[in-house]
Length: 450
Image (cartoon, rainbow, N blue to C red; front, side, top):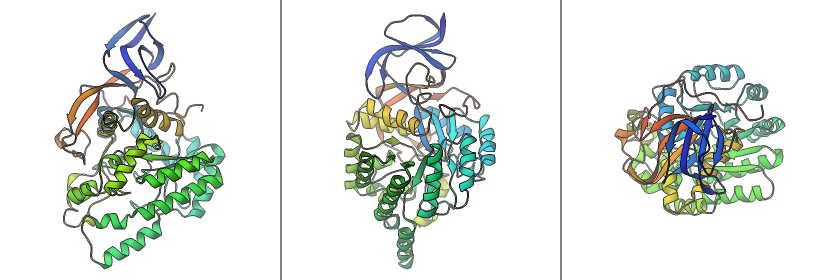
C-alpha cells in the first residue's frame, strides 16, 4: 500500500496539542497520522524542525469579481491566498450582480470554477427584500449570510426589523449570519458635522466612523442574536469593550462570536495620520490604547476568528484621497499577509500556535459548516496544510505583493514566522514564496453533513 504524499518529521499543531509525527495523504485527504513511518509514498516532504498547521480558512474576502476585476480577480486573488497560506476563501456577496438569489449564487460559483487556485465558498447577501431567497440560497450551497447595519459600498443598511426576520429565518435552518456593525444613524450625524466643517483631513475618518457607532450596532446584534437564537459572527471587531460584550453574551448562552483582523493588533491612529487613504477601511483604526487592549485580549483568547477583510483597490484609487480623504474608497488587501502577521503575533507572545490554529482555521470552519473537512489536521480532513518556519524573518514590500493591487498597508513591516509551503488537498500550491499551481485547481466547498 502506498500513499500519494507523506509529510514527515513535522511538529503537528492542533488547537489542543503539539506533537511530532508523520502525515499521510491519499486522494487529497489525510489518510493517517503516525508517530513512525509505516508505508511508502509517491512523494515525501521532510518537515523536520518546522511546524505543520492547517491551511487558513479565510471567512472574509471581497474578490469583487465578476464586475470589478480591475480591483482583484479570482486567479490573482487566490494566487495571493496560496502565497499567503490561505487554502479556503469565503467570498462575500458584493460582486456584480450582488449575490441575493440562488440563481446568482450558482452562476457565480460556475464563473469561479476555472479561475481559482485555492478552494472557495460564498456567503449570500442580505437585502431589504430578499428574505424569501435565503433558504433557496442555503439549498444552493451558500455557507451563510452577510449583512450591513450601515449603508456602505452602495449596499443599504438593514434595520433591526429586517434583521429580526432574517435571523429567525436563518436560525430555522442553522445558518450563520455575519454582520458589519456600525450604526447608520450615528454615522450619518457624524458625517453631516464633518461636511459642515469642510473637513477633508485624514483624522476626520475617525470622527465619522466613530467607536460609538460600532458599539451601538454590536449591542444591537447581540440583542437580536439573543432574541432569535441565531448564530451571529460580528465582523472586524476593533474595540476591547466589544470583545468583552460578545464574550459575556456567549457566557449566558448567546450564540455570538467575534471576528477581528490583523490591522487592529498592529496599527492605530498614528498610522492613519501617516498613511491616510492607504489605511482607510471601516471600522477605522482606533487609538493606541485601544490597539494595546486588543492585543491583550488576543492573548486572553477573547477573539474567536481572524478574517483578512481582503478588499483591495488599485493604487491610483487610493492616491485620489491623498489631498481629500473622502476621495479614496474604503478597503485594503490582506489575504497575502494575514497568516504571516498572525504568526509574527505568536512570536511576539500575543497568542500560542495552538490558539492560532483555533482562530485562523478551526473556528471559521466550524461557524460556516466546513469542519472537520476544512480547518483541521485529522484523518479524513482535506490535506490543506502549511509547513511553517517560525524563525524565518521577512519584510513586507509592495513590489513583492502578488495581489492585483500590488501594495500592502504593511509595507516595510518586519515579521518573524512564515509558511514555506502551502498544500491544498495534497497538492503543493506554494513553495518558498512561489505559487506553483494553475487556475482551476480550487474547488467549491460543500457544507459538512449536506
